[in-house]
Image (tube, rainbow, N blue to C red; front, side):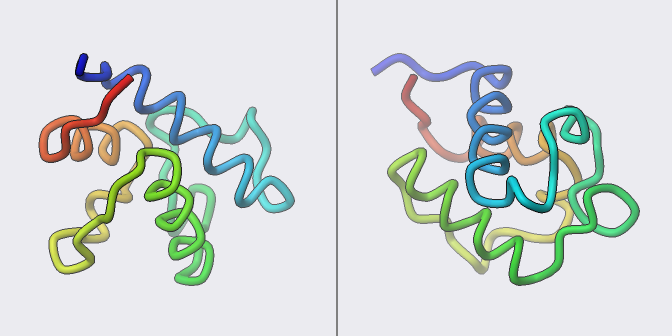
Length: 91
């Protein structure tokens, strides 16, 4: 199994956001460093939960809710780095 690059993981995360929350966000709004919560995309707890479910389905994994913090959701790049470092994500 080849490990996916951070760039590929970011691309897939962006796609999950658009598929799950497309009515709330646009592709133009989602950049690597755009904050996902608070003053960025402003995702609330329900939207984050929907995003997490989408991530688990896209990457065929179960995320440990206890290990994830709000800092992991600071931006797509921070979330992609977490996934790349802690989870073997296949291409």
